[in-house]
Figure (cartoon, rainbow, N blue to C red):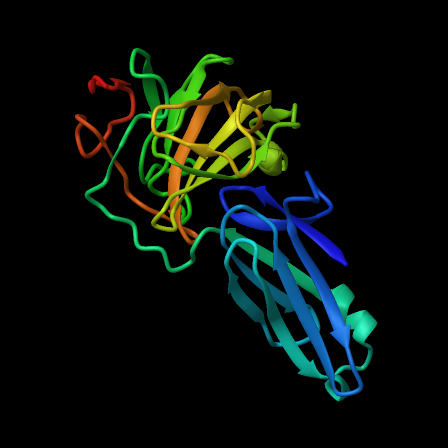
Length: 264
């Protein structure tokens, strides 16, 4: 049985045997005289969309799997494979946390991802030329924060993934998968990403419910990062979606400081 867990590079991908195996996606095969069948069990606290593609064949298996559910990922006639064992070794997996068909409500107003009494400069906004120029990052925000600044949930939901063991970071793409992060699943199927946290910088655990404004961790400089900051964005499936913040302009501009004006 393979144990798949989530890594993040501003895309969700699949790793083998990373993080906690108790909260992961398990993959196994069932081989009979007639068929090769691939199964998946989602033990993450959020739904996932899982794809598997072999290097040797022009096919792809995919399945949306609710949290706690087991489903058949794919099936092939056994006589279509030269070697089932070799075929298993050629499979490459891609996992997206949340509902791939999620529809984000554009009228929903988020809180800024830090406490309301704090003010931070936006150093990279939407559709920038540096790293926010891809479908999965175009509507993200980078707020400059000294390391150990408090981070709060911009919207309530279920903690779907936590990574906090990385120590390395810098202006090098080799560090893309080294960013510590928190991912929170919302009730509409979208997922918020809070990235570049410090080593051991999370205050919540996978599966916990959090409310908007709750302190969830500390900022840092891990991963592909040129300066200490918080990367915040919301994904609907693999695509970044535009978010608006309460009592603030619909579009935030780089170089300006922003503070949550709402009292609650």
